[in-house]
Image 1: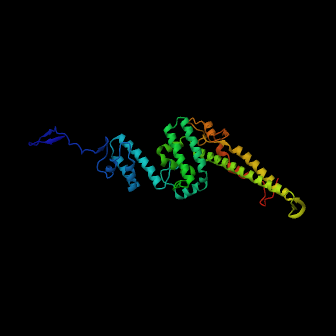
Image 2: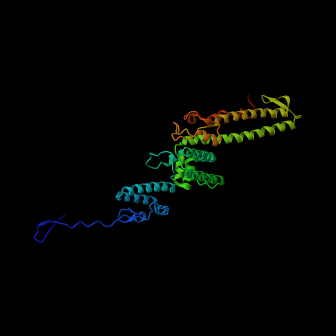
Image 3: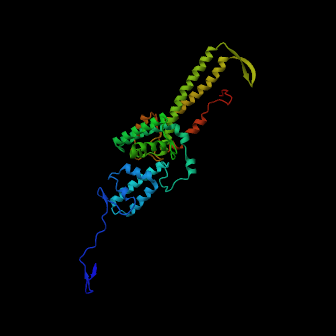
Length: 353
């Protein structure tokens, strides 16, 4: 720097330039000066302060995020910028939850919001929420497998298990709250788990595709449904047999082509329906063998790369076998199989061969 003396000549100045105004700091972290959100940001503790974040979000979530973007432009410390980006990501997730956006298990490359028409078209929770218990059971078993493979810690597994138990209780008690953005039962349960236990909930999805979840949940649900239906069917067969036995002497006209024909026993007519019900029971018994195959651990379509013990999961979920190929669960049309296995009766309830 140069200055002009009394004689008009230039001389080298030994004076130093005055330093800029001091930059406020908190916990050793410098922040930019002159921005309206600096005061709020400076109140954050080194590890983050949830109450401060919630306070900022409650005032105006989008404005708060916009303010953080502006502050990031003026930060001089790389470490501070890294910390702020993490805070911003957490705030963006919290804002999405608060405004009903929810966390989707797909569309990670999308930069904007989905059209409401697409959300409505893609929603299946109104149908698959009946599988809430199956989804939680599958998630608990998968969390145990993640722990066995050292993907998550003991503490994280305990938190996940306890959190899933709490979600189960909410569904069981009818207190589970569905929010906008819960497009299916898998998204809803994971969203609620993350709300209850924090970031550990997100680790439950490590190495697991929603294809995994859908195929597994459907099979768990079908196994339970088939077992329950089989028990009810056997009770019905028993009642019908008792009815026939108690009316063994009762005669009735037999019919053919809707015309009275030879006389038959009422018990004989009842047992004709029992024979049809027995065929139904055989179909269910055969169907459960096909359903009793574990798909979990197949990943999106090409397997799981985290060393998950599928045999351990199969044992915990009481599956007889493991799918031999990772593509099998997603090309098997279980629903069409169930439809094809009809009851063997015409709409008029007449038994057919």
